[in-house]
Length: 210
Image 1 (tube, rainbow, N blue to C red):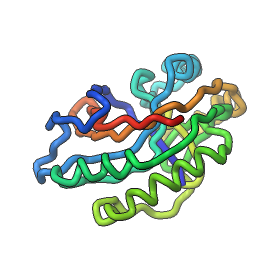
Image 2: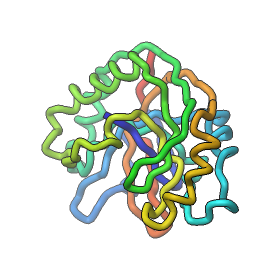
Image 3: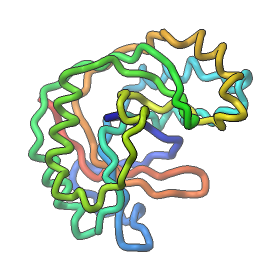
Image 4: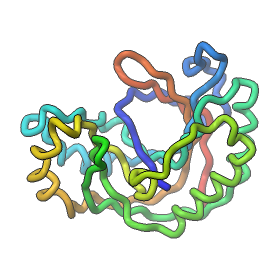
């Protein structure tokens, strides 16, 4: 399994199910995903390794919107969003620490910050999948490829054929970068609306670890 983030602008609501329809699609659905947000110090450490001048071909993720996706659910009918929220509300998880200490790329054009293996993260991920199993008909089908096996945060995107070779020195320099650690105390249900300038993310529910 794996997690990723995208270049977006973010809007948040309260911890209960949101009444906002900003993520409502033309088909009467919301595109939902489960995510862990990053604290400011981690966003800053990731931003510090961005190289806009040296690699203008990379679309760097807006630091304000960096997050780790635990699971992408996909389009869910509006009348089923509260059921997803209730299912996630039943999950129990202790707080735990995550360490970011590597930078790499996937062959399809994604730059990522890697996350050290965490048993607690693995358990949380499995609990999320189990609770969302009844909604599997709404979840997008994904091939089992490399980007699903490495927990990560997407920090940029590039065109592989055009920029992969030029990124070699950057990856060599930052491959073992220590980007810090943080304690996971909450995770979120979010909706995503595709906009011309990126995606708008809205928090639909927040769940505390204890």
